[in-house]
Length: 225
Image 1 (cartoon, rainbow, N blue to C red):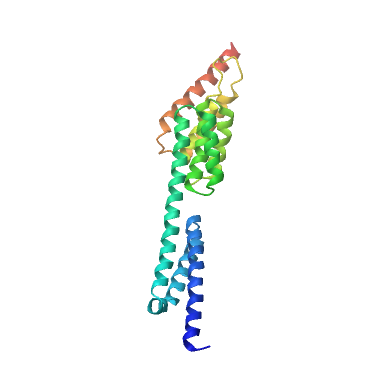
Image 2: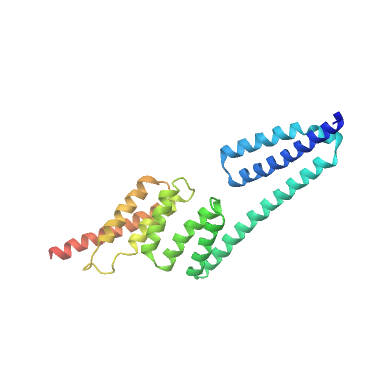
């Protein structure tokens, strides 16, 4: 095999490695895993440096490789738009009061786009849909689960607030019935106020806590009387 043929074969192998590394890099970037993202980026740079001779001998090939990468990037953007559109459609059903359908759509987003910001938001909106529907036992479970699983989420204070509200909505309208939900409400709002003293939901939480305390006091008076 001549030197020129060996050079050609080497550069073809480098091109294939470059394309494979590109695919791996884009996959890691899409998954948004920090360590994988760093490794993928380094791999991409290293392979590209090795392929510099392609520009000299086969100028069109690197352009094709870049075109493939651009196509993949466009696909990534398109996928992101689909995720956003699906989330907005689910929210539209929620706003229209079609909560069962909204929950179904949010569940589909969780399954179709796992680990994405849209999936996390969909998880929170499932809880909110149950709450708006008046299914407070379910909303309580979902909000509590969300709060435990995503303690650093930007709206985690809302999830904690809704835990208290889900208890509050279960308080009977008359004091002659079981008021354990009022006790749970106070406990939940105490935790909320301790953890998120600067939340915009603090005033309402304080008001609901006070109302729960009043109901418990009235209950004690009723029993004593």
